[in-house]
Length: 184
Image 1: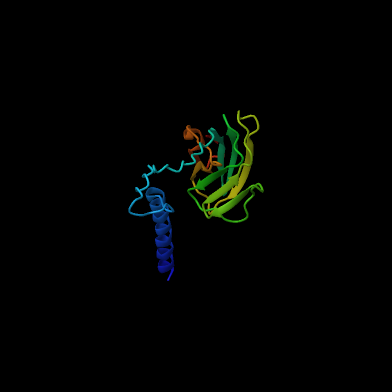
Image 2: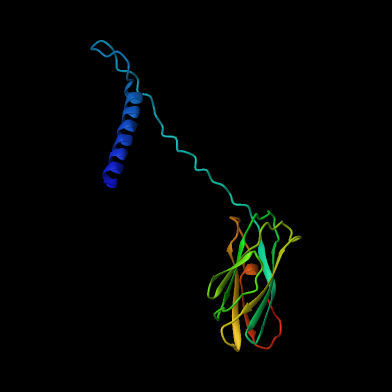
């Protein structure tokens, strides 16, 4: 039934367009007769509808910090910045872990656990120039006592800006269970 209504609508639009073009080209509304000359044919050039291209502003979002693993706990300290040239109204950083997170997680209010191995944090506005970045400190409980954890950090959403330097917002860190800080 939906297809029939859609087809009927498309046919109606096509007929209306053809009638409009036909009346313009053949001079509808003019007197016709044997002694009247046909109306001159107006050249109707189809003007393309301009494509409204909006150029996305450019920004350079970066994430840096360190990861530390001890026992069943993993600490992640993260600073998200924007090196410009445009401000970013909001973005989301994604943290993915090679082990499952369990128990009660100590996270800032801007962060949430997306699944058993992923945490998402919203940065809020990031001004160009890196002056006022957004800091996060997470203390996460892990399943068991792993010997090491791989943490992958990247931008899940960049607020619609163009980032020509995505290398500084994508990191992969191997953190052995030494309690040491592994910088990214």
